[in-house]
Amino acid sequence: MKEQLEAIQAEALEKVEQAKNPKELQEIRVTYLGKKGSLTKVLKGMGKLSKEERPVVGQIANVVRDAIAKALDDKSEMLEQIALEKQLESEAIDVTLPGRPVNVGGPHLLTSIVEEIEDLFIGMGYEVREGPEVETDYYNFEALNLPKNHPARDMQDTFYITNELLMRTHTSPVQARTMQEYKGEKPFKMICPGKVYRRDTDDATHSHQFTQIEGLYVDKNVRMSDLKGTLDKFAKKMFGEEREIRLRPSFFPFTEPSVEMDISCKVCQGAGCSVCKGTGWIEILGGGMVHPKVLSMAGYNPEVYSGFAFGMGPERIAMLKYGVNDIRGFYLNDKRFLKQYHKA
Ligand code: 2NL
Image 1 (spheres, protein in one colour):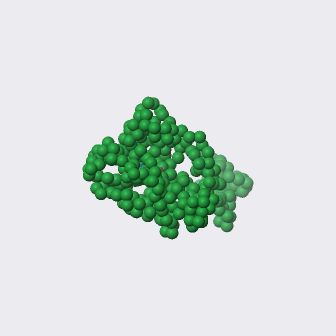
Image 2 (cartoon, protein in one colour; image 1 turned 180 degrees about the horizontal axis):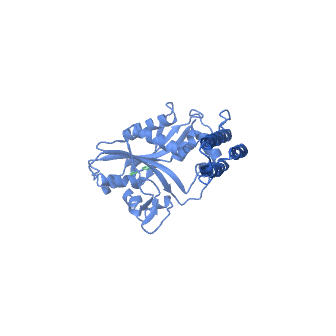
Image 3 (cartoon, helix red, strand yellow; image 1 turned 135 degrees about the horizontal axis):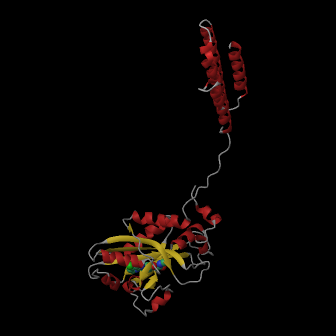
């Protein structure tokens, strides 16, 4: 029986030695130490032994069982260690490798310009308001002193949706809505940036969809000199403190009197060059004193209240400020164009 036990031990240890994974080890454990295992079988036969032999064989059996168990445990630990090392090796990170470049975006040039203009007017106490791009004929035209069949409606070729609904041709309807909301009582300063639409053929200076920012200041005793001072501040902040402005008479149906504003040409300091077409001045925006009819239609008594309004195209402002010569650059989404205007 002793030989039998020693044979079992030798065989088991040999198998443990050969085992390549935890599954094999478990099979060996069952085969030798399990309830129906070979060692257990031998021990069950111990009943047939004499009183003297029993403790001796029993002791040997214990030694054999412990030896097999220890071999299994040691091997198991070793396999775990190997597996861990393999895993660590395969998951190792080389922290010295250069990083993958991350593409960082930036605001669109038009967004930057609009925000710059917004900030400037917010600094002068203006609120920023937005409104619908699909408008009614009333807010886009009627409320701005452009009744049906008014010749000035032709100035702005309009995308009509129905007889009464259209794509707004300017942001003025936002201002008409605001005046109405303030019920002819509240003085206010506002600007409204947003997309506008005109039935134009796209070229270097025209786009069927572009951006407008309009400003409106309504209060008692608002005067032309207030408009001039405000626009002068705007021009100097936007284009440089050394810029001069001049106002020329003009016409808009919603303002009376109406003006157009020029800034002195930066390129030639007023001497005349190709940028200013020899005049020394560059046209920037239009404005004027709000027409009394526009005030009264929105509920403000023109005998008590007066206001100034102005409108500009941020594309044009950006083109002049950065020397962009084709308005389509803003809308083609060519990253080579847009990237030039990302601030670092
Ligand atoms: C331009 C000229 C202008 C206005 C916009 C306006 C709005 C209301 C009342 C009176 Cl609610 N006026 N807006 C006035 C004059 C000129 O825009 O050249 N824009 C690109």
